[in-house]
Length: 378
Image (cartoon, rainbow, N blue to C red):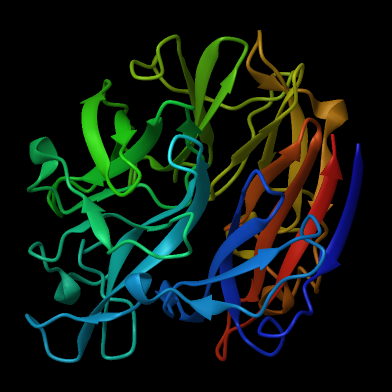
């Protein structure tokens, strides 16, 4: 495996705290990236986009996406609805780029904890968080902002799909994994996968599969989908020191979750951080963060970022294939100096060639970050 890392120094990236960089490939070879500034814990600026015509080496100056900007929330004073965790996918049936994340609320220049996870004073069940998207059409126009709000879950506090890898078919069919919380009295988030049809401007809900749950802390978050060896695989963020996976033959109905382990039986010891898949025709890989010999004081062990090959028959990580994508930078004994990974996203260029984009932040005020790109040949 060959891994080369660069820091993006294009105009609009330097001297700005850019975060959540997630890229999608157009068949022309142009790569579109969604990203936004970070100003505090879960407090993000309006969504912007940039593009690259050289496989992610250089990037255009980011521009705001008006449809994914901030909107005033009239039910509360000094409150706004924004969008975050936006992932970019190409839809071949409509020849368009879909920018799909979820909405989020801010008040008094900070994150508004509408689901009551950390700040009960912010709890606002009427401000429901949902999948949220706008589409860059072939003619260069953007569609209006829309929400994904299934009738079955309309009263849930959230029904979100941000930061997720999706499966996009050539006929307009999508598989998207969502995570949802009923209310503050039912704090464990559950996961289900929806089959949707994309018309070129909006998503139509077709059906969803079974419910996956974990009754620990916030439950299951930020599910990731991949299709490999005629099965669909989920990887799931959790808050019990593990990460989980599940498999499905039809992409909707999944087996009971199991924790990720290495081929020697040891658990992948991680802390409330997403994982992501990479693959080529014959091999499947997982990228993740984990506890190691030196990073026990680093927030959620979010440095370094690793990658390892997955044994698809045994569904375990092959330990001797593990490599570091983004090394730990800073002093792990002074965790405030360590640049954190954890909101990264892989994107396949072709076959075994991938990039992983990451906004590496220093998690202290004033927030600073660098956008990095790892160029990977598996």
